[in-house]
Each structure stands twice: as C-alpha cells, then as structure tokens.
Image (cartoon, rainbow, N blue to C red; front, side):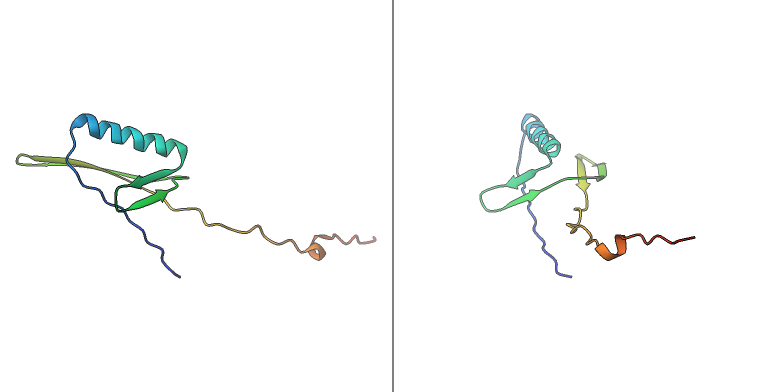
Length: 96
C-alpha cells in the first residue's frame, strides 16, 4: 500500500481577535466540507466528511497556559459500484 502524506504547519504570534477570526474561518470551511490551509510556501486541501474524532486538551504550567484542538477523520474509500452479473439475476421457475 502506498502512502501519500502531505502536511502543513503554521506558527505565528497573534492576538485574541486574530485567532478568533482564524477559528471562524476554520468553522466556515468545515461547514462547506473543503478546507484549504496555505501560506507563502505550503498548502494543503482537506475534505472533512462523516464522523470525526475531536480531541480537546488544555494545560497550565507556572505562567504558561495552552489549549489545543485536534480534529481527524478517515476519507471514504472511492469504490466502484459492484458489477452485476446478468446471469445470476435470472430466477428460474420450478414446476410443481
């Protein structure tokens, strides 16, 4: 099985208002079912669908606090419809 791994990471300093706007954009993209993350060097397109796993973590240590949200899902496998064998669909009638 081959693996097609892509990843995107962005790290920056933002104020609360900017982070709120980013989170709103993420929720809007989640509603649409298409999420694009990009910056000057990288980009990735995600297509959220079906049931998703949600992990929320928060911690505090001395003067440092943080929280993280992680959402993950499995893409539905692209399947071809099953072939129907016409010979197997014929019902033979039996005389009694």
